[in-house]
Length: 192
Image 1 (cartoon, helix red, strand yellow):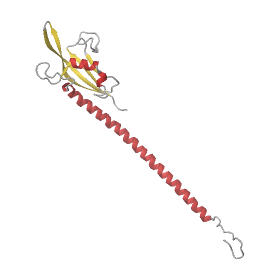
Image 2 (image 1 turned 180 degrees about the vertical axis):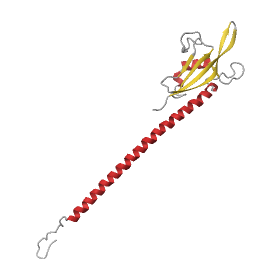
Image 3 (image 1 turned 60 degrees about the vertical axis):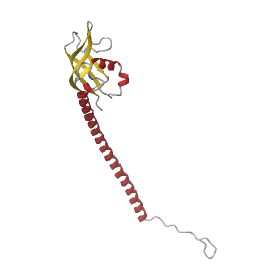
Image 4 (image 1 turned 90 degrees about the vertical axis):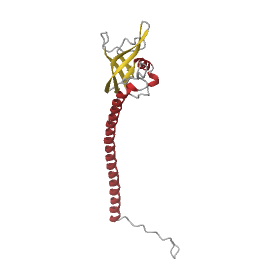
């Protein structure tokens, strides 16, 4: 500003008083308090997420267990395993051993079909005349074995069901049906 004499008048800048310092301190306290409250709610939110995710893992394992339990009861009647009418009349809880051995030999094409499940078929009766309890079947030693495995990997739970394991055998010039008592195991991998 210019006064009448042509001199520039100096503007007065108010000095900081005690009240201005007190107001700045209150603003800083409020800022720190807002940061503290935000951090508190963030930590509480993370704690709730951790607790819920642990509960979700438990629920997922229960669902996996239930799926394995249901699959073991329905597996013997699925088209991949069932005897159908190949052995005379339609049979329930009957697994065609020839189909099972071919599936065990071609697991690469079925690895996504059953997921992380490991399916095992063990002959129970009549007992095989071998010293080893579990003699793994493959194309070369079938049917002189007692254990067909479909899938690989670590397993933590298993469910089983009794089935008839049937196959065609040749006696002289006749082709006969031979059925054995077997047990189907479905194993699944738990989520950790």
